[in-house]
Image 1 (cartoon, rainbow, N blue to C red):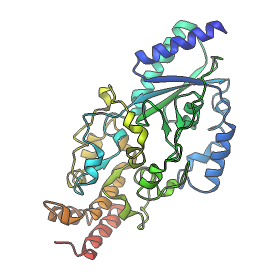
Image 2: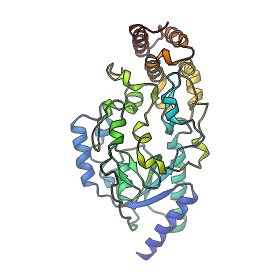
Image 3: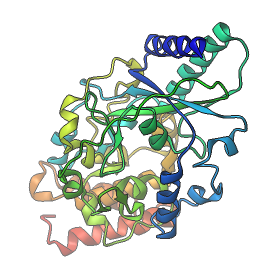
Image 4: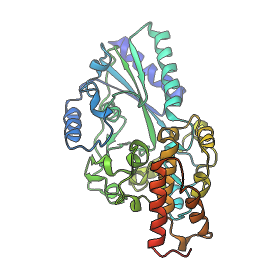
Length: 359
């Protein structure tokens, strides 16, 4: 046991050397989280994310996913870049595209996976061959529940993991292992009576503390949903075209968040300062080129145009210097080959007509 404790200490040191801000170790018992997950699925809050129920209970029972697993090493890596234009500024400028902060740079899956694999290699070099598997949001894993058990923070009322020293602007990754390492102690929940995240949600997706109806969440609507965005939710999305950070932006704990030192998370292709019209003009070839190695690829080209069309429909011409370019951009896409794109473009144009825009 003493040797395992020494190894656990070394793992934390190696993790810091590899760019992680914190590592923790947990067992695999997730009974309470399993009950919450099943209740969430029963309510249909997962929407079209069928993969959330496809794997049965392997998501909440690590040893069923990777036989022999007795411990999970959870790692945290900060991603907020001080160089990126503040999201709060973009909310007030209807012609600007607002993209979730995590998606401005290199795809976090690639970054964390490589680092975790290097960590596993270090462990193997020191302790000899062992059973393990690396995960970064790529398999049925309850990463936030495991990170909470490992002492990396607590799950807040918005369902994100919160840390007293780092807020919530960070990614999580895991190593499932058969090494019976000593486990860490979970921290207390420090949300208290605060409900700012609930009040800040543009679409009312946080239906109760610790309960998110994904079907109303802008992150779900702009990334996971592959069909039409419900019309009643479109006006509430503003200029958010990929993901949404509002529940994090208004969380008091994020005043303690530290800027990331990772150059891979720097904004690419001016995505933190891009206008909606500029991004709407991308051809499919440009979309694929500019989103190479980016999480944005996940939405697909048609989904990208769908999302931007909604944002253009929400753009208030009275607050824009060149409002006519919005109508011109939308009109240019009226005959797009995708019925999904055409539908949302038509909605956007009708919205401007209905609101008696200045055009």
